Length: 221
Image (tube, rainbow, N blue to C red):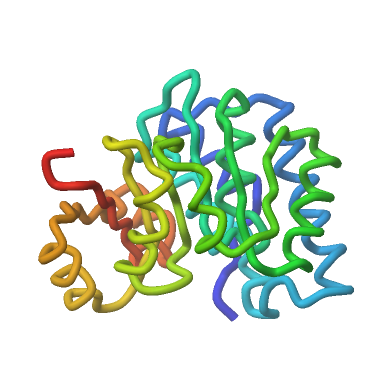
């Protein structure tokens, strides 16, 4: 079996990249991992294979995305298709002052996220709703949207665009060949930029070497 990174290894690496994580943040991340493992025994939150590589496949991508964003004191972010919450929870722990919304259509996942939110006292907004219906009442509200690639890029962009500010951006973690998806976005006037893990991240994680972040915004936004 491939070597599995520990939480300490991930957090020690993260601090070397310049992110500041105090004892309280470390404690919350450990509590989050413990709650995931507790719930996995009752609900199929993540696959067995992912359980064995929890910190590399799920915690580390959240830190990677955080390293690319430009934080401000009053940032508003929505995570689309949050699932078990790896992106919104980690981003909220790193940036407790941000207004972070996690939205998912699965009642089971939202119940888990609600317990995480209450146990860790995060102040996360958990929304059990389909993005298609939620977006109608939050126009021009969010600075960022994020996703782990729950559907194709065009559909994600259509969902995100109606709730993002004019200068807002969508960040999606993807793998594989998405050249056709990118081409469709370009025909619709969407500017894209691909971010790959730099050498330090890539050397640390084989998982991240196979992934990249797609950043999307309106052309001349």
